[in-house]
Length: 97
Length: 225
Image 1: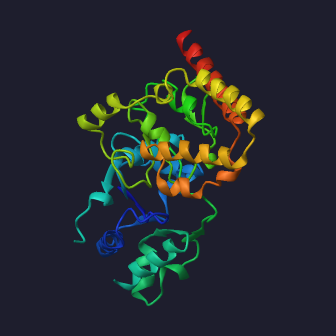
Image 2 (image 1 turned 60 degrees about the horizontal axis):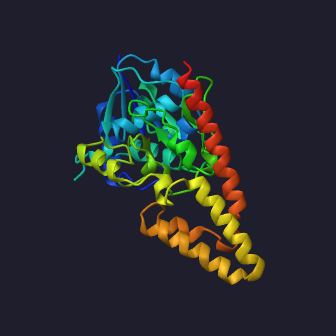
Image 3 (image 1 turned 135 degrees about the vertical axis):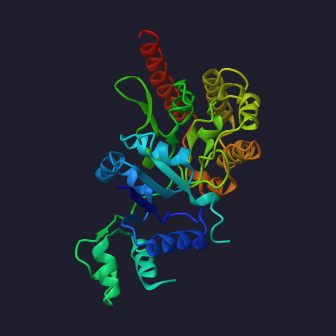
C-alpha cells in the first residue's frame, strides 16, 4: 500500500498558497490515507525519528518541493530515501493555475 | 475549500502534524473535524530558523571548500572525514554564500528562491558558471590567509598612528559593499549586520585558520585511505 506524505512548507513563501491548497484538496477528495506535516525542512533539521520510519516505507510518495532538495533533506537527516520513492514537486505544479 | 481540507490546512499552519486515516474521513462525514480526533495532531516546535545548507552528496566531491570558506563553523566532518552540516543554527539567514563557492553546485538551501541553490536540477549552464567563479583565495588576490595576515599587520600599523573608529567602520563597509556587488552576500543579509560589532581582523584570521586546519586534516585523512 502506498504511503503519502504532504509537506505544507510552512516557513517560506516558495510554494504558492493556491498550489498547496489545491494539492491538499485533491488528497482529501481522493479519500486516501495520508500524513501531513507543517515543514519537511524543519523535520530534517531536527532529525525527526519519523523521517527514518517514512524512509523505510514501500511505495512512499512525497508531495513537497524539488526532488533533489527532498532527497538531500532525508540523507542529511541520516535516512536516505529509497530509489522507489516518488517525489511530487509543488514548486513546479501548475494544477492550481 | 472543503471543510476537511481547510481544517487540516489550519492545523498545519499552526504547527501541527496531521495523520489522515479512514477514521478521519468517517469523522468528517459525521460532522466532526480532524482536530477532534485524538492522536491526530502533534504540536511542533516553532523556534526553528528555516535556513540551513543541505548537501547533495550525489554531487559533493568532499573538496572542503565550504568548510574552509564558512567562518561560522556550520560545516565539519564526520568520523569518515566526510563533509557534513554540523552547526546549522550558526548559518546566517538568507546567506547562500557557501553554495556559490561550491565548485560542484552541491550545496542547496531549500527555502531559497533561485535555481539551482533551491534544489532544482543542475544544468550545463550552472556548471559553466561554476567554472568561471572565482574561488575564495583568488577573491582576495591569492593566498587568503597571507592576505588576511597582511591586512591585519597593515591595520595594526595604520591604527597605531591614526586610530579612527570612523575610518575602520568605513573600511568594513567598503569591503562588505564589494562582497554584495560580487553577489556573494545578499543586500538584506548585509542590512542586518551590525557594522559596529563585526569580528576584528584577528578574529576573522583565527576563524579562517581554524576552518582551514580542519579542512586540511580531513583532506589528509581522505588521502591516506
